[in-house]
Length: 106
Image (cartoon, rainbow, N blue to C red; front, side, top):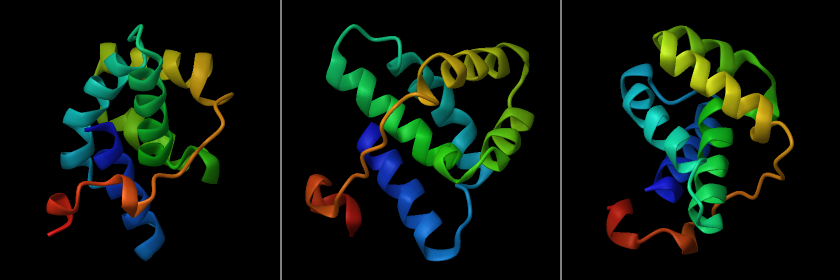
């Protein structure tokens, strides 16, 4: 799921420079935040990469502000914690189309 979210966010950003629609991103963000707290390193890093792509963190803080404004109190605090504790330091690795199940692309 994390790689699919990351791929969708990257594709949309590459196509027209926009974020995922708020209605799509709002339910995904809490799940990705929970993924960043997993003990399994693969799950944790996949969730971090998906959040970086979804927030367009490497492009600046505009995506962060848009998504923070769309979340309610607890979700906003959790996202802020994840951004400050791990996302700003993370080395971003883009997902390639070869890593995505082709049935998801059709």
